[in-house]
Image (cartoon, rainbow, N blue to C red; front, side, top):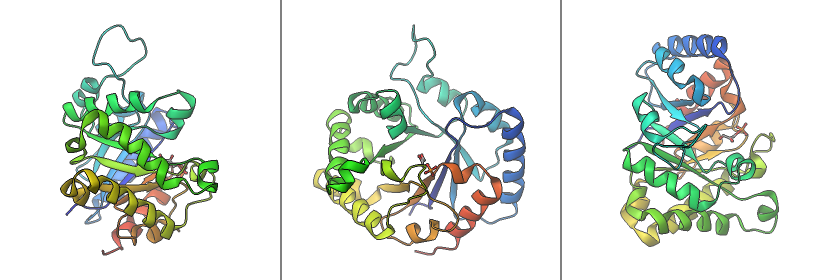
Length: 254
Ligand code: 13P
């Protein structure tokens, strides 16, 4: 059985001073708690190593992205070997902000997924529908399609010990979170979809929810049987709020 996994995605925020005080504060407060929650933080790439200096065994590091190449003439990129070299455990791929602003295709994301698995790190694959698709009832269809494109490239076995994050685009950064019962329905349909390929893979799959999660609503999501954690954006940036999210996660006994 996996512990619930809470990942804080910093996106494009922070500086050296903030990273230092955030991690010092977070680690000292978490040290006092006997945690049954796994916590990972995804600061901007340039601060990963700095963050690593402050971590204790309660927290692991997550990268927000990785390149499709291992090494070579690819100016500005970061490879999976580099992430592994500095001690990263999780790598977010397919985030809607990267799909939208950096034109990342499913094929690109599939290549990243394969590289992360080859390096024995853990992909956190983001999927989810946009507002229009949501309005016409296509949420499940879109998630299945995004999954199929990865499965067809990497094979279903690669989903062992991998994470899916369902993040409806219309709920990201809007303060308008998805209905927890609706989230359960989508997560269940994701699991059923994976089970069509392989039931054992489906059973162990961890599926996180992301999109305007905060200290008030986290419990409603985690009470759902197919929600194994959360991917948190703006609410992870303040230690007190993030710690309340962790405490509320801890309080849910499934
Ligand atoms: P918010 O929690 O700010 O809506 O962001 C969610 C997200 O995109 C996490 O990856």
